[in-house]
Length: 202
Image (cartoon, rainbow, N blue to C red; front, side, top):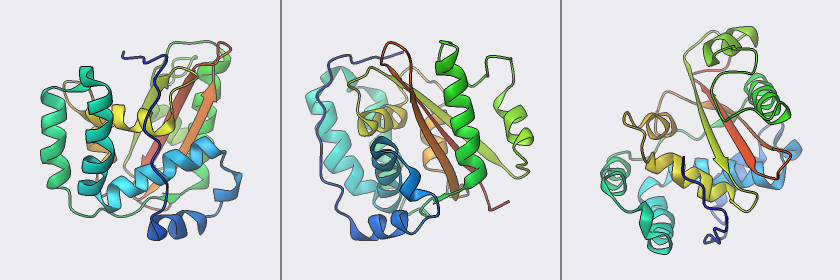
């Protein structure tokens, strides 16, 4: 697990009007914290303009942190150049509750970052318990107290040491159209992020 404890990451303006308008129109948006809003913005921006996200965000961040440069950086360029425009993600109440439940469970029990709940439930178990029936996926990310939501998103895209590039594939999946996002803090101030996805409104 890569942790950048003192990462001072680029902080580009969230200025794309199409993404901002879409995000702000979503039920539940006003309840999101500033960190969740930032992650949601960049997740949708990266789907609307994958090439621009790679060029203006990923490249700059890797220049700042050259230890991130490698074959995953190169393969991400190819994947994002081939992605074209993907559907923007809508906020979904059940997925928001599901992501919040998992993030609070893990941080509240001071458990290691995992897709499994502290009681052993898997993502699939939670998906069913929250009344979701269609296809879905989950990304998780861990960061220090200073790690920005944008940095956490880029690390998910790079998927360093993740052989199947599962986080990246989830973020670029055109069939995922709804999402729920939660970011909770451990007692030591470090962050645990959960983003859940599904293919359609339930």
